[in-house]
Each structure stands twice: as structure tokens, then as C-alpha cells.
View 1: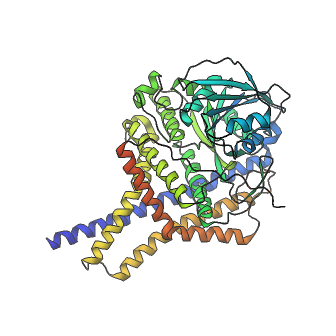
View 2: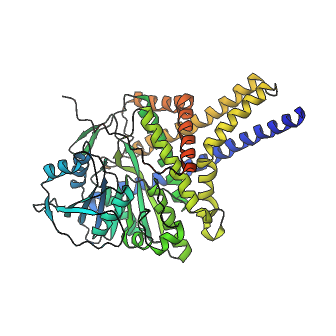
View 3: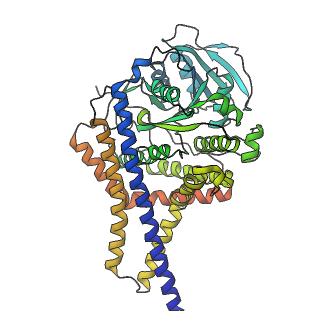
Length: 505
């Protein structure tokens, strides 16, 4: 019996090492692909800056959808950043989702909305509307409408659907009320859509963390690192997730996530597939794919997967891409309980999406989405916390049974830490190189313009320190998310915002 256990544990040890090795090799390949893609994008921006197209009348009319729930601290600064967008034709539709704070009052005070009646085509079902407001005065160049919807609480996806019902744009964005956009964000995204010969139906952007940076008039004017290590850890995570991961997935036409902070999508397709997933969804396609009376806390990923599924299912052309440099900024949580709740929610949402679209998994009919991207999400994202915890247990058992020496244990742990450190370091250097490797007039486009060597060193150190305690803490919260998913929990667990930092007096 002991011999059988010994053989089993040895095999499990080998399987875990192989798993880590495969993960490392795939992500090294991602880094190589991302390096080439980012370099090409920056070179293109150098030759023909996006700002040169601000008077291009052939760009599509765009509606920015801004769902807001208890955002009184950041909402006005966020809207001011939208009013500074340089784009020939766009509108902003804010949807207050039954906020319990002074979100509506702050908006009415800051922008002088007046109550009105609007043409409202309820193509997508949502919670009851309380009223419509619109700014009647002069608007910035390019901005055609500034609208506020006040409705009963129904969740972020419900608020986005209500805003889509009012939208007049050919393309709509999903974005967060606590985010900031650079002035040329729409120009960059729309140009990518117009110039793509294969039919770009949606495009996202890389997202920067604004914590610690100076924000003036809705714009990040000075990049600084957060004072907290938890904030620094997240900057490195975002670098890995966007610059290393999502850019490579887009290059492989396998991108499954467009951040809810800012993403541009073709409005007619969004309506056709039923809008963002809520329990009120009535679309035939949406109900067929996801079932009735269901929703998710990961609506940004779910709608992208459903869009892929629809295009592949119907044999329609279209691709989904991402801008490799940041044009959007968001505030990240800076206390451990808030980030724990956030990651627990994200992880629960991942399982929800994989469950709704499990028919695509390992199905060659859905091409690289079914054969690569979704399996990757299952094996290296959804199962990763479970496998990591199992690995700790197996290691402890092998030590207890004297099947593994302490020296061998230290070597294994050092290898795992080294792999994470290498990936984090290369991701940071990729981002720094991408910005500094070209004298490009991409003002405000880069999260990673850290001129002080000390800041770069701190980020590299953060990549190392995050392996000790921080990652294990997040794994514990992810496992809680798995338990919540199995129990059918549907809450949001929103964290409180501190607000954007102003320049010190």
C-alpha cells in the first residue's frame, strides 16, 4: 500500500511539474508574439498618429455607454474625461442603476442636465426607467448628445442594455463609470475597426491603473506608482494580463475578454445576440446559447464568448481585437479584503461563462476558440487555483512520507517562483521597451512611462514579492469564488472607490 501511494505521489509530482512547464512555454510564446505586435502598432502610430483623424467623417458614429452604481466619488471626473475625447461624431449615454448615494445629484449639479423625453426602443429588456435627462446647452466638438438615464437597480449588464436602447451609434462601448479615457481613445479604436479588412466587430484596449497617479480635469497628467505594495502587485498583473496575454490571444484570433473598462462593439450584433446577459434576456439567440433566467457577474467576457459563438455558428465573418497600448485608466482596490472580493467575483464569473458555453469546449466546429482559447481558460485559469492547492498538499505528503528531500522541495518551489518572476520581469520590460523604443507622439497612451529607474526596479521587485503570500491569498479567495459558484451565489461585492488623486498643493 505504501509503495502504491509512493508511486501515485511521484506521478502527481511529475504531472504538476509538467503542468507548470507547459504553462511557462505557452506564455513565453505569448511574450514573443506580443513583442512583435506591440512594436508594429507603435511603429504605425509613429508614422500616422491617430490624432490626425479627428476630422475624418468616414469614422462610425459611436455611443459611449456608462453604467453607474454608487459612483459619486469618481463619476464627474470620468465624464469630464469623455468630454475631452477627440472624435468627429459620438454621444455619451450615462445610466444610473438605482444608486443609493448621490450619483445622480452630482451629475445634475456638474453638467446641468434637464429632464426630458427621449425616443426609447426597448429592444433589450431591463429594469423600470425612472426618467431621462439631457444636456441642452453647447457641447464640445464632436459630441452630439449627453444623456442620463435614471432607472431601478438591475445590475451593470441591465444598465448597459438600457443605455443601448437609447443609443444611436453604429458602435457602442461598454465602459466603467470609474474609468478615464485618453483623448484619442476613440480615434485609435475606431481606426482599427475601419482599416481592418477582415471585418473587426469589436475591439478592446489595454487598461492602466490610476492609483498613485495625478489626475487633472479627467486626465492622467503624471504617472506615479501607488504607495501600497498591493497596488504595485496589480500593476504588474495588468502588464502580464494585457501586454503578454490578451495581445497574443488577439494575434491568434482567440481573444475572449474585452475589459469592461472600455470596449467598442458593433451595436447591431450586440442587439442580435441579446445584449449583455441578464435574467430578463428575451433574445432567441441568447436564450438558446445561455438558457433562460440566468446572468453572470462577468458580463464583459460572456458577451465576447457569445459573439464568437454566434459568428462561428452562423459562418459570419468578423474578428475581435485589442489595442496593445493603454487608452483607459481605472482605480484598483488597495486593501486586501476588497481585492479578495474582486478576484473571487472574477473567478466565479469565469466558471459561469465556461458553464454557459461548455458546448464550444474542444469542439472543432468553433475553431481556435473551441480548441485552444476556451481549453486554455479551463486548464490554466479556472483549474489553476485548484491545481496549485493540490500541489501544496502533494508536496507536504511526499515530505511527510519521506519521499522528497527538503532540498528537492526547495528546488521545486524556487523553480515555480522563478517561472513567475521571469514572466513578470519580461512583461514589465516589454511594456517599458514598447513605450521607450520609439519616439512617438502618443501623448497619454502609455501606462508605463516611468522615467525613474527606481520605479522600474520597484515593479520588478513587486513581480518577485507577489509570489510570497499575495498569490496564495488570492488563490484562497478564488477557491471561495468556486464555492460561491457551486452554491449559486449571484451577488456583486462592489468595493468602495477612493477617488482619483489630484496634484498636491
